[in-house]
Length: 212
Ligand SMILES: NC(=O)c1ccc[n+]([C@@H]2O[C@H](COP(=O)([O-])OP(=O)(O)OC[C@H]3O[C@@H](n4cnc5c(N)ncnc54)[C@H](OP(=O)(O)O)[C@@H]3O)[C@@H](O)[C@H]2O)c1
Image (cartoon, rainbow, N blue to C red; front, side):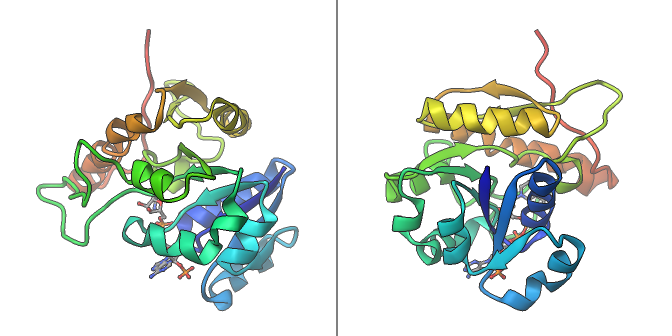
């Protein structure tokens, strides 16, 4: 599969390296090409470019930018380059304000998630929420004593979710499909919960598992 990753931060780089490791073709996008120099050296099979180059390249696009600027990054990527494509949305709507007793603050409400806003603004793209509620160090082939962790996903397009579930399976996750885009109202705040042990006890190595 050809993946276009929008984001030069830890998430973009870790996911891009993971896709390469699993035999996919990858282009990572940034506004500033020099930010990806080290990644390109360590990942000679990967390509780098602008947000627009990466979105055009990808059959599947990954959104891995700061939540407050997700709209700006998608605008730079270009609606035409996202048309009809699965967009894996790892972004969290974290506000530019400090956490309170380890609890992050969001700029969204429980009645409207970031992903719903993006889906509304880019109706031609098929957004799937994934990878938002685990740290980047545990995103690719995580090893936990408790077994395979669960990635909660949601989105309006069943085919897009199937594609994402296949990629998650390669990365060593089990997938729990929580339904349509509105479920991002519940999945995005899992990031707040995931981060609390980190902020309070510097414990950043854990993941969620759904038991039945
Ligand atoms: N860090 C984690 O472990 C983790 C885990 C799960 C989910 N997430 C979520 O994943 C997303 C990425 O996180 P991250 O830690 O990798 O990096 P980040 O620092 O949150 O975001 C970096 C990216 O944001 C882009 N950006 C910043 N300002 C911009 C602007 N004005 N316009 C367009 N793009 C802009 C940067 O673009 P340039 O490349 O052009 O500078 C860069 O690619 C976030 O939404 C975060 O909440 C993070």
